[in-house]
Image (cartoon, rainbow over all chains, first blue to last red; front, side):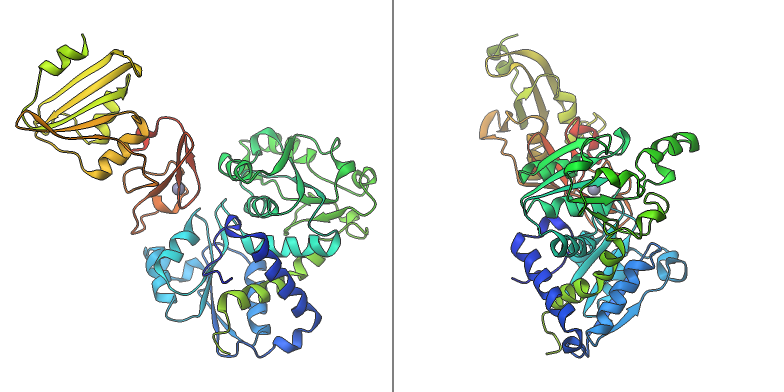
Length: 305
Length: 153
Ligand SMILES: [Zn+2]
């Protein structure tokens, strides 16, 4: 199979996911074999929202395939500031690159972009929508750790606005996974995501506390609860405190629990977790490189071969 | 008032929308963008007994025939409606509304952060899902009061 764009995780089948993860594993095993594969290819990095991590990860992935990247720069310095539409920006950038990585603060931006260009568009985050390339590296990390079937995962934090959560939950419906969603009432999964999960027959349960479900989890995926989601500081502090973990919290979890986080974290995972076996979030971030190399290979489809 | 009496007040040319779910007639007019200022003859009957629907509304618009996209959106709030096109007092075409797979350019997305609300050169697009419609861009689902989201510009 070959996908034209990667816009949402709902478009990914099990076979699609496995193809990318298998390729990522091949790359991981022998990265030098891929160093010249896309020598003439150019990847455009269009980040309409500040991001260092995802951008660096795509930049590095492309360069390790032998290609180059061209960066739109910050929104402040670009024509967007002069009022150019996203559609126009994409049509111009299309002429510079073989594929476009897009991050944008509005939901649906990547879908719109994909309608205006012929080169592949990769959604690197659209508002509170989706972030499917993050999901692929999350799945790669889970697969390495426990495999992707017969698995209990707890996804905790800001489930309403968390785009990494939405994409991950969608993609996991392709596997035999029990999904537990742990969040304050006000940050539950949005209706649209719940609709997709029900449509695909997902096994899901929602909780307001981690305690009751922690002992059965194989994976705990923590996300940040942001201050701006709450009307005032005191409410934020009270709620966010409930969804913070430390080494002591994990004593009630399985010995081989994998603790994951899309990063950057603030204080939702205490530093004393970092040295535990269970901490997988740095490894998860490193996996971004082979997985994004594999994804680019899938979408570029050998243009420079 | 019975069905028989309703049929008596015939119009010469235009559209009769029958079997509209009770209470939806004003939304039907709003979908059609008719507020009276166009000078079209409009008659509405609301909440009359109907064997099928319990209560139904009937909307008659003189000198105006509906386009397919208008019929598509009508199907969202009046799934049982029948559309009668009248020419010279005769019904020349009678159709049941039929739910389309997508509705383009008529509804606006209630998610303010949706890219379709950002001044981009695209029409909105909604797919039909059980009990509602869903934005093809941001995924937002509208279940209640679909008529409130009709783009009146
Ligand atoms: Zn929308």
